[in-house]
Image (cartoon, one colour):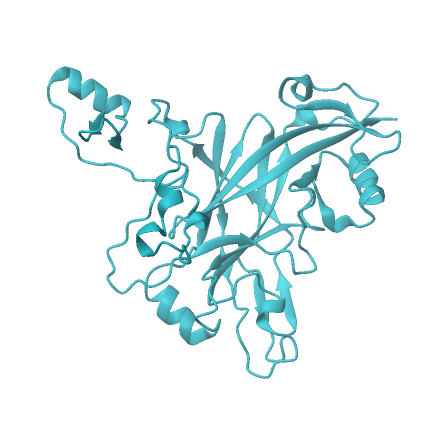
Amino acid sequence: MAFLDNSGDIILDAVLTDVGRKRMAQGNFKITKFAIGDDEIDYGLYNKNHPSGSAYYDLEIMQTPIFEAFTKTNANINYGLLANASSELLYLPVVVANEKLSPSVNLTSSVYYLAVNSETGDKLKTAFGDSKYYLQSGLTSEKMLILESGLDTTDLKGDASNRSSYLVNQNLIDNKFNVYADNRFIGGVLGAKSNGTFRNTSGGGEEINMGPLTSVRASSATADLDNYTTFTATGITDDITYEAGATVTDTSLSTLAGPRGTATALNFSVDNELSSVSAGTQSTKYSLYGKTAQTIFGGSDTYDYIDTTIIVEGNTSTSRVQVPVRIIRYSGC
């Protein structure tokens, strides 16, 4: 349903759930819950230096074309606005990838490569010249996707006192992470062990031990994303802290500029159908959902791949990060 002003512009566009539509048909409809999101808004367009003054700071944002609401659940709000009853809340956590540590996998060409087998892994290591640019399906050690949850602000030092004040006391510590993965392509998730360590020394040295990764339980289907399964991974205390005078700064190890809450490490197991070696049978999923026989890195080696998105959400803060993953298989030369 939509609410219109006199000019005919939609100022509020709301979509009812299936239950809501059923109750409206029965004549007993009553709004008890609603969700608000701002997926389509690019806040980078806010221009506080606009020559015409403050009334024009948000002009480009206000003129951004917005789609009318969709009826399909997973086409609506991917980034819902967070409601928090605390009147003392000054900062909100984010979940971010950490590529600064020795076990970290690194983004390349805007994706994280996930090799479906060791044959493909060997080919990628040669193509990239380093194993840090890809994950290998099912491995419990080697490279991992490392994520941190905390405050990415330079207003606050990342010390223990600020962690307590702005995260612990505000109930913003993500002890668990929900991992949403497309079950057509991802068969399993591996996560950090519960007794892992993620800290620095008083001199700033790295003390990171999050492996070996262990299998993460699949908890349920994901209601608002078709074909997605929810996995629940453990968060461990992020003890990378600011130490005055340390030889290695805290931000040399952490992606977050401010107080840190928790961290986790992930790897993924691809669906068995996708993991065949080049001499084996190629899954039809590659041609249905991706591309085949691509010379991505030059030369004569060809690859099949499928691009997918894995979503990781802090279970307390509900902060999310989208992880672009390219599932890749060496197919021959």
